[in-house]
Amino acid sequence: MTVSLHPDRFHDLPIRDFAPDDGTRTPPAAGSVAWRLALDYDAKHDFAQLWQTFLDTVDPGGIRALVIGPWWHGGYVPVAATVAAVAADAERLPALEALFLGDVTYDECEISWMEMGDVTPLLTAFPGLTELTVRGGTDLSLQPVRHDRLTALRFEAGGLPARVVRAVAGSELPALERLTLWLGVDEYGGDATIDDLGPFLDGARLPSLRHLGLANSEFQDEIASAVAHAPVVARLESLDLSMGVLSDEGAAALLEGQPLTHLRALDLHHHYLSEELQQRLTESLPGVALDLSEAEDPDEDEDDGDRYVAVAE
Image (cartoon, rainbow, N blue to C red):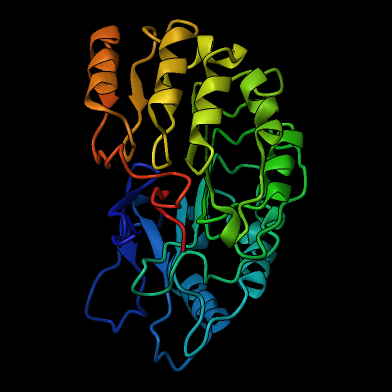
């Protein structure tokens, strides 16, 4: 699996690509769409210029959602200047509720080639933000923060650094309802361990959490075994353990652990489960929306490296 398509909606709004108006079209109301800003490979301007043109064209006071695509042209550059530009204009964006940093497909840049940096300013500069998605893991960092309004946080990476996982765990996010982490693989910087996930499984620091995604992991069985007895599960509405190398061992642990019948949805897509375990899950969770799509060959040898997560490079 690769990240191959751009979403057409974000924050329950249609995504609109921003292009400097040539005067022939009436732009939509600032808050009626999620605005996507991206540079073409052969763009003649940099992101800072695009950003200022955007703020001069669209009423910044009404903007509710932003989607940032490729911020480079020619060669890849770190995201730091882009983060700084957006954060510096926070006072001009009082209505901003949602931000997606890194809406980049594999044909624009592989996920683990994207040059990231510290994304903490996006949270500290926008206390009214309710949703943040960040794609890309190389050199990604985050400092523990307190944010009282954030309800959805999502990190997508082929290798999510442990320092980011620990920073999320160390943050105070009392309103957070949805948390998704694509952990990735060690080869691309995904060095988190099961111990780093303990605060999420305990759930004490995330009192509002209703959805937990610990996905795209090469230790998915270990995660499933921990989830089977995790206190947070009893109050979740949905659980995502997809995209990793989940095998019969992990699935059996889920079945033998605490009840999961209260869940509305359990996402296990991209897995290495035998038909027998798939059948057991289906029969044991009749009222749960269970995603067992993208079944890989369970006979692939894990020790020989034949099993792979859905998104790595």
